[in-house]
Amino acid sequence: MSIFAYQFMQYALLGTAITGLTAPALGVYLVQRRLSLIGDGIGHVALTGVGIGVLMHKSPVLVATVVAIIGAVAVEIIRERSKTSGDIALAILFYGGISGGVFLIGLSGASQGLNAFLFGSPLTISDADMVTIAVLGVAVLVVSIGLRPWLFAVCQDEEYAKVAGLPVRTLNVIVAVTAAVTVTTAMRSIGLLLVSALMVVPVATAQLVTRGFRTTMALSMALGLTSAVLGVVIAGPSDTAVGATVVLFAIALFLVVAVGSAGLRAWRRRSIPTGHPACDPPDVLLKVDR
Amino acid sequence: MFVTEVLQVRHGVVAYGDRPVLRGVDLTVHGGEVVALLGANGSGKSTLIKAALGLVPLAGGEVRLFGTPLRRFRQWPRIGYVPQRLGAGGGVPATVGEVVAAGRLARRGWRPASSADKAAVTAAIESVGLADRVRDPVSTLSGGQQQRTLIARALAGEPELLILDEPTAGVDAASQETFAGALGDFVAKGGSVALVAHELGPLAPLIDRAVVLHDGLVAHDGPVPEPAGHHAHPEHDHVHPHPPHTPPSLWEAP
Image 1: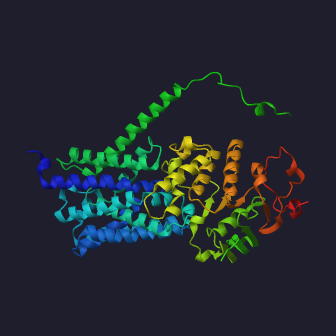
Image 2: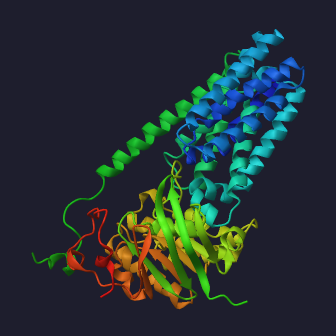
Image 3: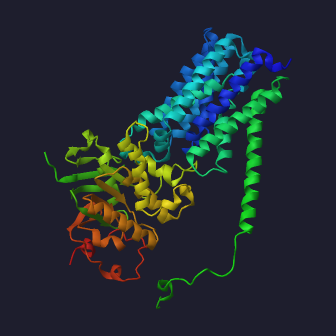
């Protein structure tokens, strides 16, 4: 009997696959806005939520979602008003978040479970976790795909979106909240410290070969899903750092595509015809009198 | 009530920190009119249109769009804005078609794109001569083609007033001609235009009135002034930074 007949392996595969799809679907907006590392910061803040959840014996995933949303909205406010102190404020928020989480989990006496939240532990996903992950994952996909024209417009040119009368602030908050939900959805499978990689790396891989936003989003989701499934299938049965394996697969795909597309470009460049122009330059270029 | 002033700025004052950029500027664009905002670098012309659109806060004065004070103005589909260059977004590739389609959102609202929406986007792209580049990433276009993409984006919303910030700066001659043609079509259909320019080039025949800013004040409001002094020389290429205190007389109409 295959190990994937066991429910815990099915949960591991499904939970990680959901992250593989949702993280790049939302991440493409963060990359477009050149905020690639914000997902990492939100993960730091979410750890405080995990700490509160563990300490109060509530679902760590749900409490982390609430705290991460508050953190993400704070990040968005700092970004909107960003002056010179903006990145200092973000640093304080992020490191405050991770320290608060470690401190609270330490207080609860459950610090041996810390690694499971930081780096993921998909083989221990419970029934309740699975339901939460599935519901939140679907919500992320509905927002990222359903609101694509509007989110694209705001992330591509915020000033223009304002003049077009779009509710820019609301859309920015939607991106921030969805990023927070994506992070906590991924917490049990990939882990808070590694989820940002799946928001960024598949998008970076896709845009090596794509020409438009929609195709970049679709291809990055396919790449995220592929890395997630490969990671669980390879590392799942022996339970050796599944989250890290998924991320390493995503990076390996990036390297393969980067080398492949560079090679293809070099080959195409060599085959460009050279020699004489097809026709004479127009008169206007020849009549310069100096 | 019928309003003929599509854009009106009364005694507009804008300051960046302590530095005043606009020191009480009046600007009016009537329906069907093409107004050029001229002036040296740093004279405040780009700031004036950004203030008129609410992108830069006014420290004093008042802006009205189609007769409505800016604060209460909600009819954004009536306005098409063409910024100086493509926004900072650019981490991810976007095609010409995708960028131009974003310009339709003002009119489309939250509905799925209808066939009329798609037709408007296609027509806008054709009007600036980029039909063969629809699926190309904007990052692979020349500066002039990127500028034409931004104009198509504004036209896709079928606006009544076009506001353009330096549409011809650094744009090749062929793109300038195409752009002048698209703008001419827009004006012929009754559209109004306010455009910031450093030099008018092929746009000159379209301009009804010129407003010249100097040091945050209006130095001239009337016919397009003839270039004077070394500005009049045909090979003058306008790449020099103007001295900070060019006397206003240089710009006055003869």
